[in-house]
Length: 256
Image: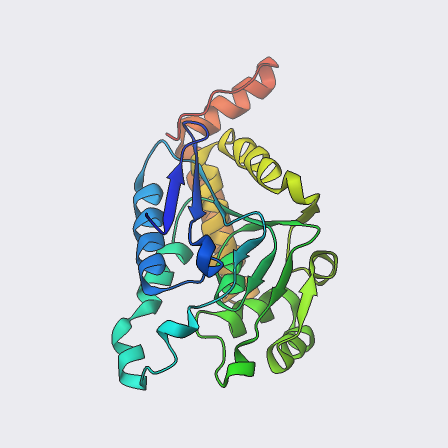
């Protein structure tokens, strides 16, 4: 049985589901490799306009597979080159929505933070507990968490391994929305369909500029925004969108 499943709720929306229920969706090497392959393929699929990533009803992902790591040495971990697998998710040009029920711990929290939006169920909880087993986050946890919630909240979670429930995660800025547990996937798919109905070139430019601008000076980031804004005026979708607005009709975007 595959550790990950890909579904197509609609032509423009893909759903990737973690599928290791017996291991609480722990992220072993096979899962990471499959996720990298899926995100690469879906990112290159012209029909796909948004991707939803989810786990189970009780657990999103309970972290890295400790059994797979306990006896590894530094060189073994280096040779795995897992950062290349994570990069396939981080560099996916399509918007990604994480639909989180239950635990998102360690690597599971890092995986959720690779998304562009996080929809969390009321019972969801987030943590980076790596310090409790003698290590630290290794898939962007220290950096993405700090960018999401700031230094002082990030330090509190990283140095203690404490978890936060969904409502607190929302207040901290770690998640986008909190909904009833049984509505998580439905809400994520609703948002995905809404995003998929938008002009794809504009959506991809927004994502690219926002992420690139985070690590640039304000002046450089504004320049990136300005150039992307200007570039979109050569797209058919810009003409369609503005003409549809003036003609008071619904636009039809083709990603051209």
